[in-house]
Image (cartoon, rainbow, N blue to C red; front, side, top):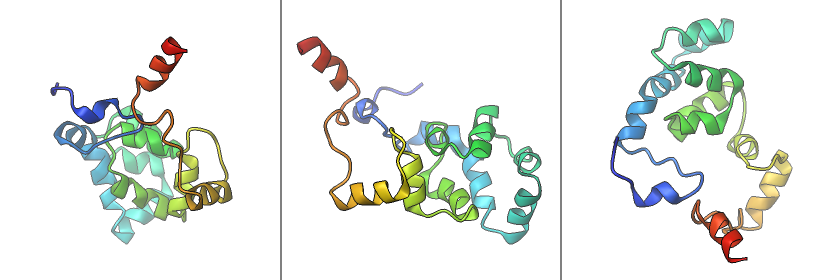
Length: 137
């Protein structure tokens, strides 16, 4: 276990430090395998069977099969590598961004939010912010 980092308290932050990289190594290697057509074909034929050829955790396999983008990141996935699955599925970055939102939104809603400057910083600076506001208020 590593020492706490300053960024540990920022909600939704999954920094690819050494620990996170080790945790997601096999998940990320699966993602990288999708660079080759023969691997994409094999994955398309039987996703679960193909995933068994990687030493991923059950939680990582479940996240991939469910296309749970945030869970893949929590489990050590690198956003650039996991996006290879999105490309495999024919999704855009906006599609994935909408699916990763804390509150469900359509792709058009996500695009509009980004055009308006993105998500509000309120409640998104520190995990303990919400707790402090309740205590103070």
